[in-house]
Image 1 (spheres, rainbow, N blue to C red):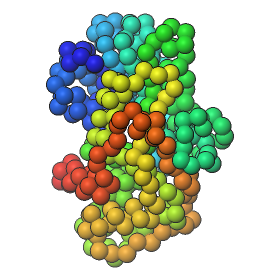
Image 2: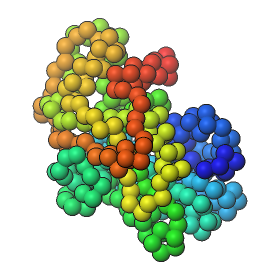
Image 3: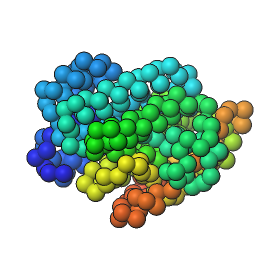
Image 4: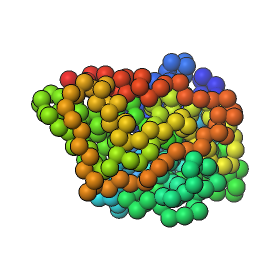
Length: 309
């Protein structure tokens, strides 16, 4: 991927897109095509077509999506399905029409069946029922994978897909109801610390196992794939390390400096019991994550303090 190439990062103000922009600028890529949602509504096919026809991007990364945690996924089921289908469909088709050199579609580990064998291998896709709480989002992401495969099969497009594990880091969403587990924990413990609370309540039993990756590691992996991966099959991007929600909660508690107790509300849903991705295909190509969970949590909390001071 040449430094002079025109690179369109769809969703550049989101956590993943912003990390990609940081990494590309560090690497010396200056010809970045960046548009806010008010400047370019990715759900609007005509706007997307006009943008691609005018700017002719050489490379495209689809980091734009309607995202959220368990509550948001389960509450806004129609929006999560419709908006994500529209975004990916519009961009992928416009990239084909305008002969984009390469496109990278970013999905999510929630594409896998709820009770798939662990760790999750790429070939387990569509072998069982999805987790009900985030099924619409997962279906939209599976459709994106299949769109990339179909445009490759029918038209020879170099469209690839990568499935990141659970992400966290700078620019995360810290809404208590609509965020993922790490930013929700950071905010919950910070507010409890600030208020001098004696107890903080956490949803669920704390028993589910999860894998996490610092978002700047994902950005590095994306550029690695753009430069080194041209296969039809999507590829997992994970750390290969897992932690229970209970242990994670205590790690975040320590990083934030909350000195009270934790109570787990077992009447609330846990979600998928375990979710560890098999990233051996990516690792065999020579890429591995660099930021440990302890280091990443500390960086994430510092970012939270800077953003919410």
